[in-house]
Image (cartoon, rainbow, N blue to C red; front, side, top):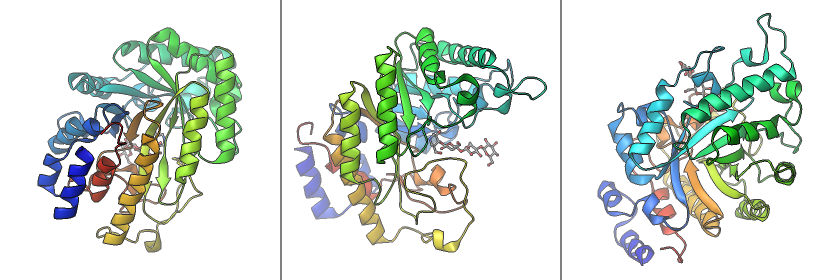
Length: 374
Ligand code: G3I
């Protein structure tokens, strides 16, 4: 019914305006009964600095993720020194607004200070020391927010594109079982929290196979993993709806929840291989890679809407198995995609424009709500 009314409004008046946004169902309401809809937040959006975006977050989303404030380098920058000032505000904001609060992340090769892997003479520490550091960190951070952070990205991006395990500082010192240990420590620290493995480009066959094997092995050993996060930093033509569909289905067969954890759509020319979201990559600026500095041309805007409709059409086929869809950011203005892998581009990856107004893609997402839930 809601979908029909929406279609009539679009036909009669065209796509969104300010008033339109106020009249439309919100993302969280439209997908109630299917999955939670969320966004990754930066401090301005939960600390009162940006009231407009804060209001947008409160109205549209029922789950939040911390874009950076819970990463190791932020909360635990030096040995024995923890700084929870921003993380506390983030969690309070989520609780006050009755949101499903996500923790991101505990064990990752990136945004973790070098001291974690070294002794005071800058020599690598041994397995026992690193396991103790990992356990202490997980207990301190997860323990602080026990019962309040409902789901944790416990291990982030542990796989290479060919599906093998990434040779990070963690694996080199501890061995392959660092993953299992991280999950077990997180479970000790919060017996109720959902615990996830989170990665990008799991739609590519080799990496998907590696991830399926990893999760199967963890499950077979009784490791407490409750879900898998497909990041979905996607492009206009990668991955296909079929690839996404198959990926969700395959993980579902393993009996884990599936979440879309970091959704955005890159409309700019690709400067890296399909699917990578490796934050360490950097490509030199070139005007050819930044074709829309003054606004997105209408045909591309429409293509983006179509892409979002297809994505949500696919996610919506798996209501329930897909328990959450989280955008990696709120508006185009502060998206990481403006600075990665090329610094200073003007990108348009999200549903809200630089003035925090809904883009046509917002309407497409609302329209894509499965008939069984609308
Ligand atoms: O905080 C410093 C600030 O003090 C300094 O002035 C400024 C100068 O560049 O940098 C600031 O740090 C930046 C940080 O974001 C906070 O804004 C880092 O340079 C920048 O590299 C960092 O980027 C983050 C990236 O992870 C780092 O790995 C992005 O915001 C964040 O969106 C991105 O998120 C990751 C997920 O955690 C995991 N999956 C992939 C995703 C995209 O890379």
